[in-house]
Image (cartoon, rainbow over all chains, first blue to last red; front, top):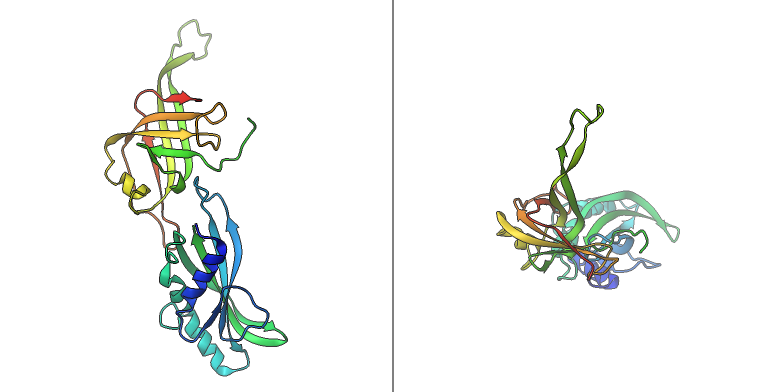
Amino acid sequence: MADITTIRQKLAENIGTVTGLRTSAELIDNPSPPIALVALDSVDYHNDFGNGIMLSFSVSVIVGRAAERTMQRKLDAYISNTGSQSVKAGIESNRSLDGTVDDLVCPGVSNVGSITINDQTYLAAEFQITVYA
Amino acid sequence: MAKYVVTGTQVTLNGDDLSSNCARAELVISAAEVDTTDFGSGGFTEVIGGLKSGQVSLDFHSDFGSGAVSSTFQDLVGTIGTVTLIAGNGTAASADTPVYTATVLINSFTPVSGAVGDLSTFSVTFPTSGEITYATA
């Protein structure tokens, strides 16, 4: 299995295929929307007798200022399950991450709504990713 | 050896190490109950041990890669195979990590299994054929 940093970077590369969306493999202090930030949520060890692991990532997609009317439509496009702006399709565009993991799946999106960063309110959504390695 | 949490039972089938795709292993060795109840049993049943038998149950994560577990099972249904299980999280036979060797009848394989969004897994349960051996070295 590849190290977790490589998996993050490969996930960011996958999401980078989404039209018009910047990506970061790590959380950053001053994100510049629209941007997707990859974060590791949890790891389950001993997934099999060969020391396999299951990793849960979340990708926060921050679209833009919540007050702007076009932002909701932009977020709708990112949440869509197909299309060039679909984040789910981008995440699953290369499911083995170039052979570094066994498989991955994006089961859903949560926390769709506004978040506050540096006193600014942004529209955002959180995509879950389960990775088997 | 002390009590232990299972993290790495080594599982082989016909010499192929399938541990990296295996998540549960169980070997059951049992003896038939032969009834010897008679008029001198005082109103209770009496039994003695009869013929022994065994059963191997394994849970796998599906993988159709070359030489991987699903490909390994593909052509084996209906054949006799040899399963080894090293207990105690061991990788070699020792007093604390004994190796059990069983000849089994591979009488089923589920190549396609799983609901949408789930990891594809399959389980097999094979009857043993002949003696189950146990080694510590």
